[in-house]
Image 1 (tube, one colour):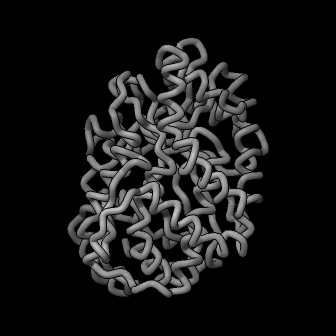
Image 2 (cartoon, one colour):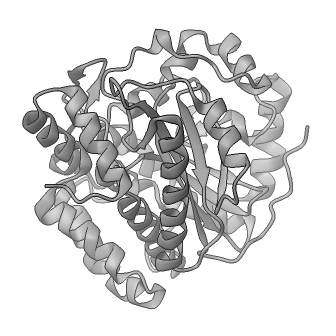
Length: 376
Protein backbone atom coordinates (compact mmCIF):
# COMPACT_ATOMS: atom_id res chain seq x y z
CA UNK A 1 0.00 0.00 0.00
CA UNK A 2 1.23 3.57 -0.67
CA UNK A 3 3.04 5.45 2.07
CA UNK A 4 0.72 7.50 4.23
CA UNK A 5 0.76 11.24 3.51
CA UNK A 6 2.98 13.18 5.89
CA UNK A 7 0.70 14.81 8.44
CA UNK A 8 2.41 18.08 9.31
CA UNK A 9 2.49 18.82 13.03
CA UNK A 10 3.60 21.62 15.30
CA UNK A 11 7.36 21.89 15.04
CA UNK A 12 9.40 20.83 18.09
CA UNK A 13 6.55 19.19 19.98
CA UNK A 14 7.60 15.91 21.55
CA UNK A 15 6.30 12.60 22.81
CA UNK A 16 7.92 9.57 24.43
CA UNK A 17 7.43 5.81 24.19
CA UNK A 18 8.97 3.53 26.82
CA UNK A 19 9.30 -0.24 26.59
CA UNK A 20 9.24 -1.60 30.14
CA UNK A 21 10.19 -4.85 31.82
CA UNK A 22 7.65 -6.90 33.79
CA UNK A 23 9.51 -8.39 36.74
CA UNK A 24 8.45 -11.17 39.11
CA UNK A 25 8.96 -9.94 42.67
CA UNK A 26 9.82 -13.44 43.88
CA UNK A 27 12.95 -14.13 41.83
CA UNK A 28 13.26 -10.84 39.86
CA UNK A 29 13.20 -12.65 36.52
CA UNK A 30 10.90 -11.48 33.74
CA UNK A 31 7.32 -12.72 33.94
CA UNK A 32 4.87 -13.23 31.07
CA UNK A 33 2.00 -11.26 32.57
CA UNK A 34 1.54 -8.51 29.96
CA UNK A 35 -1.99 -9.76 29.06
CA UNK A 36 -3.08 -9.56 32.71
CA UNK A 37 -1.52 -6.14 33.24
CA UNK A 38 -3.00 -4.75 30.03
CA UNK A 39 -6.44 -6.02 31.03
CA UNK A 40 -6.16 -4.41 34.46
CA UNK A 41 -4.98 -1.10 32.98
CA UNK A 42 -7.87 -1.14 30.47
CA UNK A 43 -10.26 -0.90 33.41
CA UNK A 44 -8.64 2.30 34.64
CA UNK A 45 -8.42 5.87 33.42
CA UNK A 46 -4.88 5.49 32.11
CA UNK A 47 -3.08 8.85 31.67
CA UNK A 48 -1.35 7.84 28.43
CA UNK A 49 -1.42 4.95 26.00
CA UNK A 50 -0.36 1.37 26.73
CA UNK A 51 -0.02 -1.57 24.36
CA UNK A 52 1.68 -4.96 24.06
CA UNK A 53 5.14 -5.56 22.69
CA UNK A 54 6.81 -8.51 20.99
CA UNK A 55 6.87 -10.82 24.02
CA UNK A 56 4.58 -11.16 27.03
CA UNK A 57 7.24 -9.96 29.48
CA UNK A 58 7.15 -6.38 28.24
CA UNK A 59 4.74 -3.53 27.52
CA UNK A 60 5.04 -0.16 25.80
CA UNK A 61 3.64 3.04 27.26
CA UNK A 62 3.49 6.37 25.47
CA UNK A 63 2.74 9.96 26.38
CA UNK A 64 0.68 12.53 24.58
CA UNK A 65 2.13 15.44 22.61
CA UNK A 66 3.95 18.09 24.64
CA UNK A 67 5.82 21.32 23.99
CA UNK A 68 7.40 21.59 27.47
CA UNK A 69 9.70 19.31 29.43
CA UNK A 70 7.87 19.81 32.73
CA UNK A 71 4.54 18.79 31.24
CA UNK A 72 6.09 15.70 29.65
CA UNK A 73 7.69 14.71 32.95
CA UNK A 74 4.41 15.23 34.80
CA UNK A 75 2.58 12.86 32.45
CA UNK A 76 5.34 10.26 32.67
CA UNK A 77 5.04 10.48 36.46
CA UNK A 78 1.29 9.91 36.29
CA UNK A 79 1.75 6.96 33.92
CA UNK A 80 4.40 5.44 36.19
CA UNK A 81 2.27 5.79 39.32
CA UNK A 82 -0.79 4.11 37.77
CA UNK A 83 1.33 1.23 36.44
CA UNK A 84 3.05 0.70 39.79
CA UNK A 85 -0.31 0.37 41.56
CA UNK A 86 -1.58 -2.05 38.91
CA UNK A 87 1.61 -4.08 39.11
CA UNK A 88 1.32 -4.32 42.89
CA UNK A 89 -2.10 -5.93 42.47
CA UNK A 90 -0.52 -8.62 40.28
CA UNK A 91 2.63 -8.96 42.42
CA UNK A 92 4.82 -7.77 39.58
CA UNK A 93 7.04 -4.75 39.18
CA UNK A 94 7.75 -2.39 36.29
CA UNK A 95 11.40 -1.72 35.58
CA UNK A 96 13.55 0.34 33.24
CA UNK A 97 16.83 -0.74 31.69
CA UNK A 98 17.66 -1.67 28.11
CA UNK A 99 18.01 -5.38 28.87
CA UNK A 100 16.95 -7.67 31.67
CA UNK A 101 20.30 -8.85 33.04
CA UNK A 102 19.65 -12.59 33.34
CA UNK A 103 16.47 -13.61 31.48
CA UNK A 104 16.83 -16.35 28.86
CA UNK A 105 15.30 -15.54 25.50
CA UNK A 106 14.19 -19.13 24.87
CA UNK A 107 11.78 -18.86 27.82
CA UNK A 108 9.91 -15.85 26.39
CA UNK A 109 6.43 -16.07 24.87
CA UNK A 110 5.42 -14.17 21.74
CA UNK A 111 2.41 -11.97 22.45
CA UNK A 112 -0.69 -13.34 20.69
CA UNK A 113 -1.11 -10.58 18.12
CA UNK A 114 -1.06 -11.21 14.35
CA UNK A 115 1.82 -8.83 13.61
CA UNK A 116 4.02 -10.29 16.35
CA UNK A 117 3.24 -13.85 15.28
CA UNK A 118 4.07 -12.94 11.68
CA UNK A 119 7.38 -11.39 12.76
CA UNK A 120 8.17 -14.48 14.82
CA UNK A 121 7.68 -16.69 11.77
CA UNK A 122 9.86 -14.39 9.68
CA UNK A 123 12.71 -13.78 12.11
CA UNK A 124 12.76 -17.02 14.10
CA UNK A 125 14.71 -16.87 17.34
CA UNK A 126 15.54 -13.19 16.77
CA UNK A 127 11.93 -12.33 17.68
CA UNK A 128 12.32 -13.73 21.20
CA UNK A 129 15.79 -12.23 21.48
CA UNK A 130 14.07 -8.91 20.81
CA UNK A 131 12.98 -8.91 24.46
CA UNK A 132 14.97 -5.73 24.89
CA UNK A 133 13.72 -2.37 26.01
CA UNK A 134 14.10 1.00 24.34
CA UNK A 135 12.93 4.58 24.58
CA UNK A 136 11.63 6.21 21.43
CA UNK A 137 11.33 10.00 21.18
CA UNK A 138 9.13 11.74 18.61
CA UNK A 139 9.71 15.33 17.51
CA UNK A 140 7.03 17.19 15.58
CA UNK A 141 7.91 18.52 12.13
CA UNK A 142 6.14 21.26 10.19
CA UNK A 143 6.73 19.52 6.86
CA UNK A 144 7.94 16.24 5.40
CA UNK A 145 11.11 17.86 4.06
CA UNK A 146 11.83 19.31 7.51
CA UNK A 147 11.53 15.78 8.89
CA UNK A 148 14.11 14.40 6.46
CA UNK A 149 16.43 17.35 7.09
CA UNK A 150 16.35 16.80 10.86
CA UNK A 151 16.69 13.05 10.48
CA UNK A 152 20.00 13.41 8.66
CA UNK A 153 21.25 16.53 10.46
CA UNK A 154 21.00 14.55 13.71
CA UNK A 155 23.31 11.80 12.44
CA UNK A 156 26.41 13.02 14.25
CA UNK A 157 24.50 13.27 17.56
CA UNK A 158 23.25 9.68 17.59
CA UNK A 159 26.23 8.55 19.76
CA UNK A 160 25.21 11.19 22.32
CA UNK A 161 21.84 9.54 22.84
CA UNK A 162 23.31 6.05 22.98
CA UNK A 163 25.77 7.05 25.71
CA UNK A 164 23.31 9.21 27.66
CA UNK A 165 20.65 6.50 27.76
CA UNK A 166 22.87 3.40 28.00
CA UNK A 167 21.45 1.00 30.59
CA UNK A 168 22.08 -2.50 29.25
CA UNK A 169 25.54 -3.64 30.39
CA UNK A 170 24.36 -7.11 31.49
CA UNK A 171 22.93 -9.86 29.29
CA UNK A 172 22.33 -13.56 29.98
CA UNK A 173 23.82 -13.12 33.46
CA UNK A 174 27.16 -11.59 32.49
CA UNK A 175 28.65 -8.13 32.07
CA UNK A 176 28.99 -7.71 28.31
CA UNK A 177 31.55 -4.87 28.71
CA UNK A 178 29.17 -2.81 26.54
CA UNK A 179 27.32 0.13 28.07
CA UNK A 180 24.50 -0.62 25.60
CA UNK A 181 24.32 -4.28 24.62
CA UNK A 182 20.66 -3.84 23.62
CA UNK A 183 21.53 -2.24 20.30
CA UNK A 184 23.45 -5.35 19.24
CA UNK A 185 20.11 -7.19 19.25
CA UNK A 186 18.46 -4.46 17.19
CA UNK A 187 21.25 -4.46 14.60
CA UNK A 188 20.63 -8.14 13.86
CA UNK A 189 17.50 -7.20 11.92
CA UNK A 190 18.02 -6.66 8.18
CA UNK A 191 16.17 -3.33 8.01
CA UNK A 192 17.99 -1.69 10.92
CA UNK A 193 20.76 0.91 10.88
CA UNK A 194 20.54 4.26 9.12
CA UNK A 195 17.94 5.65 6.75
CA UNK A 196 18.89 6.21 3.09
CA UNK A 197 20.26 9.68 2.39
CA UNK A 198 17.32 11.51 0.84
CA UNK A 199 16.26 15.07 1.67
CA UNK A 200 13.23 15.40 -0.62
CA UNK A 201 10.02 13.73 0.58
CA UNK A 202 8.67 13.18 -2.91
CA UNK A 203 11.84 11.31 -3.84
CA UNK A 204 11.65 9.32 -0.60
CA UNK A 205 7.98 8.44 -1.05
CA UNK A 206 7.75 7.80 -4.80
CA UNK A 207 11.31 6.64 -5.33
CA UNK A 208 12.81 4.78 -2.40
CA UNK A 209 9.70 3.62 -0.52
CA UNK A 210 7.78 2.68 -3.67
CA UNK A 211 10.71 0.58 -4.88
CA UNK A 212 11.06 -1.12 -1.50
CA UNK A 213 7.34 -1.85 -1.41
CA UNK A 214 7.53 -3.35 -4.90
CA UNK A 215 10.15 -5.80 -3.69
CA UNK A 216 7.63 -7.15 -1.18
CA UNK A 217 10.10 -6.62 1.65
CA UNK A 218 8.15 -3.79 3.35
CA UNK A 219 4.54 -2.76 3.63
CA UNK A 220 4.78 0.29 5.90
CA UNK A 221 7.26 2.41 7.84
CA UNK A 222 6.85 -0.03 10.75
CA UNK A 223 8.97 -2.51 8.81
CA UNK A 224 12.03 -0.26 9.07
CA UNK A 225 14.03 -0.48 12.30
CA UNK A 226 16.21 2.52 11.50
CA UNK A 227 17.98 4.48 14.25
CA UNK A 228 15.85 7.47 13.23
CA UNK A 229 12.82 7.14 10.99
CA UNK A 230 10.04 9.44 9.79
CA UNK A 231 6.52 8.73 11.05
CA UNK A 232 4.25 10.34 8.45
CA UNK A 233 1.02 9.44 10.27
CA UNK A 234 2.19 11.45 13.29
CA UNK A 235 4.10 14.17 11.45
CA UNK A 236 7.27 13.38 13.39
CA UNK A 237 10.72 11.91 13.30
CA UNK A 238 11.30 9.08 15.75
CA UNK A 239 14.65 8.55 17.48
CA UNK A 240 15.01 4.86 18.34
CA UNK A 241 18.57 4.32 19.63
CA UNK A 242 17.97 4.99 23.33
CA UNK A 243 17.87 2.26 25.96
CA UNK A 244 14.96 2.65 28.35
CA UNK A 245 16.44 4.60 31.28
CA UNK A 246 16.04 3.49 34.89
CA UNK A 247 14.05 6.63 35.77
CA UNK A 248 11.33 8.70 34.16
CA UNK A 249 13.38 11.81 34.93
CA UNK A 250 16.15 10.62 32.63
CA UNK A 251 13.60 9.66 29.96
CA UNK A 252 12.10 13.17 29.99
CA UNK A 253 15.56 14.78 29.97
CA UNK A 254 16.57 12.81 26.86
CA UNK A 255 13.46 14.03 25.05
CA UNK A 256 14.24 17.62 26.03
CA UNK A 257 17.82 17.21 24.75
CA UNK A 258 16.53 16.06 21.38
CA UNK A 259 14.02 18.92 21.27
CA UNK A 260 16.76 21.49 21.97
CA UNK A 261 19.06 19.93 19.37
CA UNK A 262 16.32 20.09 16.74
CA UNK A 263 15.67 23.74 17.58
CA UNK A 264 19.35 24.52 17.07
CA UNK A 265 19.55 22.54 13.83
CA UNK A 266 16.49 24.28 12.41
CA UNK A 267 18.37 27.57 12.59
CA UNK A 268 20.43 26.00 9.75
CA UNK A 269 23.62 27.74 10.75
CA UNK A 270 25.64 24.55 10.28
CA UNK A 271 26.42 23.14 6.83
CA UNK A 272 23.59 20.94 5.53
CA UNK A 273 23.94 17.15 5.93
CA UNK A 274 25.65 15.21 3.16
CA UNK A 275 26.05 11.51 2.41
CA UNK A 276 29.71 11.52 3.50
CA UNK A 277 28.61 12.33 7.06
CA UNK A 278 27.83 8.63 7.35
CA UNK A 279 31.36 7.44 6.62
CA UNK A 280 32.11 7.32 10.36
CA UNK A 281 28.54 6.68 11.50
CA UNK A 282 28.83 2.98 12.35
CA UNK A 283 32.20 3.45 14.01
CA UNK A 284 30.92 6.27 16.22
CA UNK A 285 27.81 4.32 17.09
CA UNK A 286 29.93 1.33 18.15
CA UNK A 287 32.15 3.53 20.33
CA UNK A 288 29.10 4.86 22.16
CA UNK A 289 27.63 1.38 22.66
CA UNK A 290 30.87 -0.13 23.86
CA UNK A 291 32.39 2.63 25.98
CA UNK A 292 29.61 5.12 26.73
CA UNK A 293 30.95 8.53 27.68
CA UNK A 294 34.50 7.19 27.42
CA UNK A 295 34.08 6.47 23.70
CA UNK A 296 36.30 8.15 21.12
CA UNK A 297 34.39 9.32 18.05
CA UNK A 298 35.38 10.92 14.76
CA UNK A 299 33.79 14.21 13.73
CA UNK A 300 32.22 13.55 10.30
CA UNK A 301 33.31 16.88 8.79
CA UNK A 302 36.78 17.47 10.27
CA UNK A 303 37.86 13.82 10.78
CA UNK A 304 39.08 14.92 14.21
CA UNK A 305 39.05 12.28 16.97
CA UNK A 306 37.20 13.63 20.00
CA UNK A 307 36.11 12.20 23.32
CA UNK A 308 32.38 11.56 23.40
CA UNK A 309 32.14 13.01 26.90
CA UNK A 310 33.78 16.25 25.75
CA UNK A 311 31.57 16.43 22.67
CA UNK A 312 28.38 16.08 24.72
CA UNK A 313 29.53 18.69 27.24
CA UNK A 314 30.37 21.12 24.44
CA UNK A 315 26.96 20.51 22.85
CA UNK A 316 25.19 21.08 26.16
CA UNK A 317 26.89 24.48 26.42
CA UNK A 318 25.87 25.27 22.84
CA UNK A 319 22.27 24.37 23.65
CA UNK A 320 21.94 26.64 26.68
CA UNK A 321 19.98 29.42 24.90
CA UNK A 322 17.72 26.84 23.26
CA UNK A 323 17.03 25.14 26.58
CA UNK A 324 16.15 28.53 28.08
CA UNK A 325 13.76 29.28 25.22
CA UNK A 326 12.13 25.85 25.57
CA UNK A 327 11.93 25.93 29.40
CA UNK A 328 14.07 22.80 29.66
CA UNK A 329 17.10 24.04 31.60
CA UNK A 330 16.52 21.53 34.48
CA UNK A 331 16.52 18.65 31.98
CA UNK A 332 19.83 19.60 30.42
CA UNK A 333 21.28 20.27 33.88
CA UNK A 334 20.47 16.67 34.81
CA UNK A 335 22.26 15.40 31.73
CA UNK A 336 25.25 17.63 32.48
CA UNK A 337 25.55 16.10 35.96
CA UNK A 338 25.44 12.62 34.46
CA UNK A 339 28.13 13.35 31.87
CA UNK A 340 30.44 15.40 34.10
CA UNK A 341 30.08 13.67 37.46
CA UNK A 342 27.67 10.76 37.93
CA UNK A 343 27.98 8.58 34.84
CA UNK A 344 25.17 6.94 32.89
CA UNK A 345 22.78 4.24 34.06
CA UNK A 346 25.04 1.47 32.75
CA UNK A 347 27.62 2.56 35.28
CA UNK A 348 24.96 2.81 37.97
CA UNK A 349 23.85 -0.77 37.28
CA UNK A 350 27.43 -2.00 37.60
CA UNK A 351 27.72 -0.22 40.96
CA UNK A 352 24.44 -1.75 42.09
CA UNK A 353 25.65 -5.19 41.04
CA UNK A 354 28.81 -4.77 43.11
CA UNK A 355 26.85 -3.46 46.09
CA UNK A 356 24.05 -6.03 46.02
CA UNK A 357 26.32 -8.98 45.25
CA UNK A 358 24.37 -10.35 42.30
CA UNK A 359 22.03 -9.72 39.39
CA UNK A 360 18.85 -10.36 41.43
CA UNK A 361 19.70 -7.66 43.95
CA UNK A 362 20.61 -5.33 41.09
CA UNK A 363 17.16 -5.80 39.51
CA UNK A 364 15.51 -5.22 42.89
CA UNK A 365 17.38 -1.92 43.19
CA UNK A 366 16.45 -0.96 39.60
CA UNK A 367 12.78 -1.66 40.35
CA UNK A 368 12.93 0.72 43.30
CA UNK A 369 14.58 3.37 41.13
CA UNK A 370 11.74 3.20 38.62
CA UNK A 371 9.22 3.58 41.46
CA UNK A 372 10.90 6.86 42.34
CA UNK A 373 13.34 5.91 45.09
CA UNK A 374 16.61 7.79 44.98
CA UNK A 375 19.84 5.80 44.45
CA UNK A 376 21.87 5.35 47.61
